[in-house]
Structure formats: C-alpha cells, structure tokens
Length: 252
Image 1 (tube, helix red, strand yellow):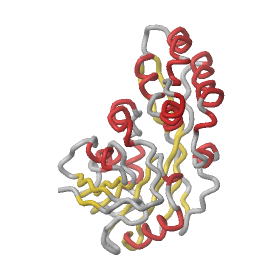
Image 2 (cartoon, rainbow, N blue to C red; image 1 turned 180 degrees about the horizontal axis):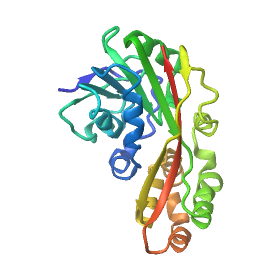
Image 3 (tube, rainbow, N blue to C red; image 1 turned 60 degrees about the vertical axis):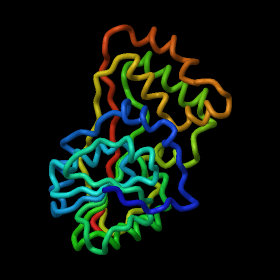
Image 4 (cartoon, rainbow, N blue to C red; image 1 turned 90 degrees about the vertical axis):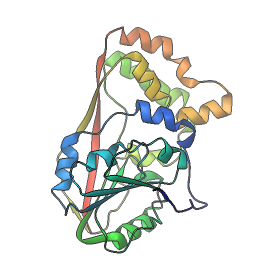
C-alpha cells in the first residue's frame, strides 16, 4: 500500500517528467556502501528519502528488516522498483509521516541539495531512534576517457550550464556547504562504476535536470547537439564509466 503526504509549495520537481528514463539510465550505487552503512545502526527500519527509482531502497533491503522509501514525486514512486521489504510512499523530506523514534537510519542519495535542510534534519532527528544515523551522498561528472569527458563537460558547462538549478552548486562543492547536526563520522571512499555503450551514456545525459529545462525552453534536445561527437569519441565498444561518491554520515 502507498501512503501519500501532499508535497508542499516549496517542492521543486525536476524529475517527474523523465521518471521512466531516470529508472532506466541512472547508475547503480555500490553494494559495499550499503553494507558499511548497515553496520553503523540497528537493522530494523531504514528510511530512504527522495528515493527516486528506488535503487537505494532495494539495496538497503538486503540489510534491514523493513525499508520505507519516500519521494515527493508521484511519477517517481510509480516507476520505482518493487521489492517485498520496501514500502513506497509519496512524501516530502521535511514531512515524512513516519513515527517518532521509529527509524534506525535515514539515507539520501543525490538529493539532499534539493531539501530545506534545516527542516529535513529536524525531521530526521524526530524519526531516528537513539543512536541512529543520517547518511547522504552525491556525485559529480563521471570519468570515462579524456575525449569522452571533454564532450560531457562541454554539454554540462557550455550548452546547459545556465539551466542548472542553483542547488547544483552544493554538489559541485561536494556538500561542503551543508552543515550536518550531531557527530559527523569519517567515511571510506566509494565509487559507482558501469560498463556502458554510447547509447547508455546518451540516455543518462538526457536525465539531467538541466537538459530537461533546456528542452522546455528551446524545444530542442541539447544532448543531440553533442551526440555525434560523443559517439565518435566513444566508439562502438562498451566503456567503463566511473563516478566518485561523496558520502557524509552523522550520528544524531
């Protein structure tokens, strides 16, 4: 059963329009990261906030008895991966609808920069049980090869740079500008990797919120402007793509 908490007026929806593409083309987080996070808390209940397509929630299900996964976007929840341990709900980060002291860990993947962080951390503190932790991670541009990376960087900066929401700056700063409450923990380094074709990369680039905003403004797919150059740099064989992760964890 899905529970619904109406999104507030400050909810910035950058992803509902491409929820299906998001589910198909986003890279997968490393399994080792979820094993590490599970060792930091109890294993009864995890809250995956701003779950998107549910990939983090499903990974958490390997380590927790129950996972509640929320997103303010109904379209994202409707496209999420089903799992018997995961319960999906439409709810904002700031008003989860969860009970006080009920959760062992709160996770946020590539989404903390969209939140009203003061209200979110207050909500996380309310729902976390004693000794619980909040974990948030983000990633910037991927690394593939110098030639491919130059094409992606050109799209990111030169073509759609003006269309990135201002919150994107927090990712570029690796969340250094976000102060976590409680005791922040030192964390290991993790990275995402994928073995992708040029088609996979092009599909991923089209999920960028800036590309969607450019499309609405200009009526033209910005990825199409670099597609030929990227295909030429990529070649016909799959390539290994890497995204270094920034992981911040605090015990509240």
